[in-house]
Length: 190
Image (cartoon, rainbow, N blue to C red; front, top):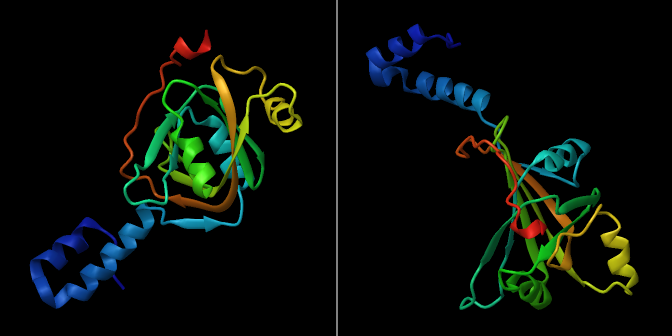
């Protein structure tokens, strides 16, 4: 067994290759102790839901089927996302940046939402799934059902995007920098 101390590292480095297996074992022990590997879940766990609800920003990714098309990746903020159940999330989609997410979902249904742990322990969370577009229509039952999950709709809300989640994945997030939240931008709130 390898002693886990700076002295053991120095010994291994001093005596070189004859301790190669020991170096590899030691580094594997250290690596496992300091990183969280990728993990798959069957659904959004209560712990993950709580973590999602504390995040200030998330990213939405979609892509067309054609290799000539552009991948769309959009940051989202404000109080615009809700976890509806362990397999479903939705967010308010607003005007102002084109409508590629909607076009891609209508073409192939694929959508991924991603969060990064900018504060606290490192974590990246991705929710892969099939998207559903619910256009703003005050007389539509589905619109009313989803909109009722929000205290108020942000001005410019044109639709609600639903992600019917079929894969939940976390990974380490060790390369994500610490960033401090200051405040929301107010332009979309008026």
